[in-house]
Image (cartoon, rainbow over all chains, first blue to last red; front, side, top):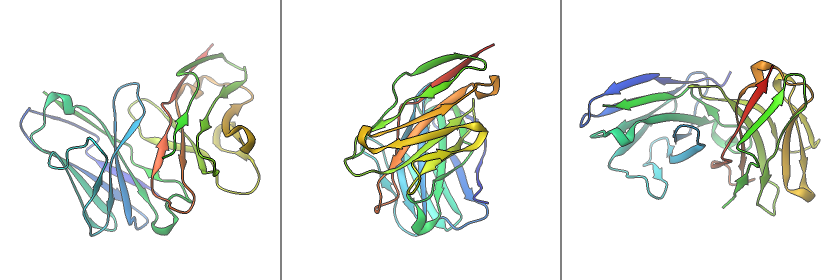
Length: 118
Length: 114
């Protein structure tokens, strides 16, 4: 149980275009989802916390207008990178928490999405 | 806010040797503690976690970790390294009660020498 999927696994886009990344909890309801960014050889940087049905909470320094997060259902959250630029190229990882047990139980991580902006 | 320190960004061990990856946290209140492994271009896989109870926690792939409150540590060990253990390892903590946010260490890259 507790499987999280991400789609696509890899995406290459041209500078100036927008890209949407989906994060799905396949066998549980995730009231909270998290989006991380990971640069090569570095740790995960939390970008935002998304609760179902409400606006995402962004970490300091993360542009909310550039990284649009939608958590419309208990099993789906999306991250849209708008007007992507080469510096947005990175590995994006989502994770999901199983409701009230988030923090008590582990976060369940997706396999990640490699974004390359040319 | 919590902070997590992983001493040693790179650790090399010989195949069959002991693996020791260090993790220290900053909170005066013991948090929940986790170790994750990441293989290239993949997401994170949980190795083990400590929330309550026995302070020596056994995880997958022969790994274990011991929570030491007096040392605010949660070091990861494995008695005998395999080539397949070569990966990036992350220690993470989350606050009890408030839940939600995880704080990650900077990671330790483990190399296993044949």
